[in-house]
Image 1 (cartoon, rainbow, N blue to C red):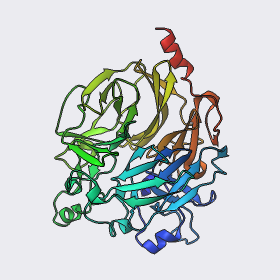
Image 2: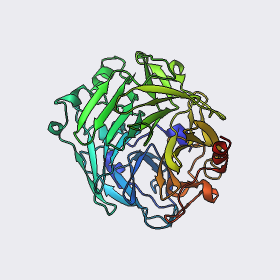
Image 3: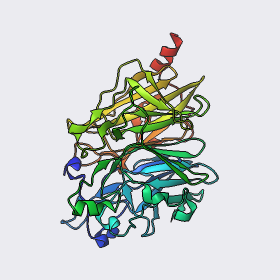
Image 4: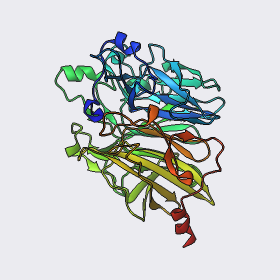
Length: 433
């Protein structure tokens, strides 16, 4: 079974969905993809997405279904991908699991995160309201927690949820001041239930979502703007961004900055299709101030990563001496139907691209896309799930670790390593002045 070829399949019968496991054994695990992930305190939380697994029923064997639980992983202990304890936190029926969604993380107290957008499976869509809902997960500090729907009367301005268009595959980030952003994305009848009527009436129901949505976690206030941050120095309000990555860089300027990486831009008045899309390259990058919303652009140096590139993941590390490194991994080229296995670091303030070690074929046959990643421990990156050109993920439970300071990719998490340092070739760039 080629995972990329069955990416759109879902089990329809809810009874079957609940019979399978969100955390299959290593022997039964095939793959997981399209998850979101965040770190709260000493735990990684993995939410949404889909999981493939072997099932004793020969009819169902190899099928996929939406994740109905949130998974947590303890970061205080050493573990390997083969032996890691994956704790499942069930969701109540009113909290519908979604894929390619967006997470806004609040690190205060024990921590919480908000889930917005993403697309549902068949069974989930039948039980959600037409009015969009904002979901909240509140952690308990011990690897558990609970889900709730944020009451609409607590959200400002009054009635704003009825005016919003939840999407999938937007670029999302959260600032250190607790403001979450989603830029662009794609709205469909599977992200916004009211669009079912458009589909039934023969009206175009799939549409790029222009602009930028922000949510202030402290005040529970949404703010929606009709235009996205201007790309590469040219403002085009008719373009919307999809499948890009947004990353918040603290400490740059008064408010920090958010950088947009990769993705494609398409006219909002066209059906979503690669032929209408323009790749967003990695040479001239768009940054914006999360408070003033002012955009600016910066040319980069070094070898430029290939584009178009969508559905990759990125994390950031404070590299000391006023420097900050953004590491990113893999991704897809949907025009050419291929996955990337390369990895890169963008170092600020030098704005220089440097290649990292490619993901080895043994861990990513033909590349990897639609994965997520988070920073764990003092210097490691946890790459979670993904799709690829083989029949099964060779990485146990889809949990691959990267540490350029201790040999690259592997399956062992170590919480007590020395702090992160930039790769030697990045250090050399700054030493040259």
